[in-house]
Image (cartoon, rainbow, N blue to C red; front, side, top):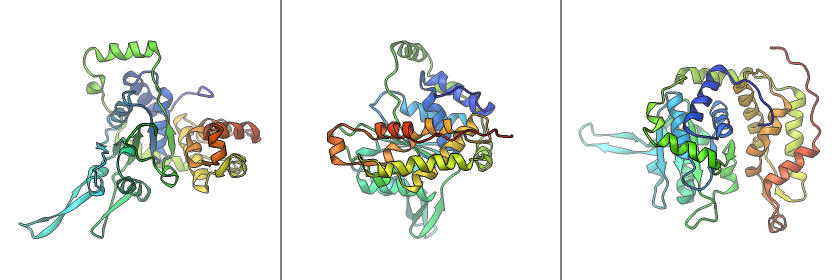
Length: 320
């Protein structure tokens, strides 16, 4: 983290509990909670076995939410995600059998192992907040959060997500391997009973939904808004970038910053929030020129360069 602040009492307790299950991934836990608060979704790109599934299950348990898992495979159909209407011979009517997308916290595991058609069914539900079956629209549960995982694109048998669909994710994160000390602690934790089994909710679903509504009260100064726009505008002018960040990306960065401020028990956004969150919110929304890719330029490096060049607004005193 770029700076140290006290977390919101309830949300901080949730982060601390995740830290007892997922060792050394405090930043990933904070960002995941921020995404749920902002009603966004997270794409986790990492190798198998680094704790992605455990992270999502812990989040669901801590807010008393309904957890669902979708294991994406090449033969998975859209109806396996959204659900299907089945004719009941007794009532002589079609009945909707909900799919796993109707949960609160949904793990979309290995999303890049299924066909683009099935990927689209998930991403459409994320975007619309509802599913439509046989002409009938059904709203998704609240809170609703998808954490999609994908293996790195160099792995065989994958269907990389198109840029237009990547844009639907608030954050793209990588957890990475633990250090030797952290891995030793993981072994000690798993030596006995799985710590997930004893985890209890620290926030009710109703409390969490109320916190989501509080996001509207988090102030974003005009100077901070101009800072966000200055960054995204630069992505459209950068010589290495073919397609820069869209206005949706600017909105996503602002919403993420509001959630991050709330997590840190503030009712206002500061420039440090933008600087910290931009590398997680913007790179996956950009397409680089072929020449830049050939020269091993990365979107993350472009964002880092832009952040160092765009003038940071002077922080004015905020009154609670």
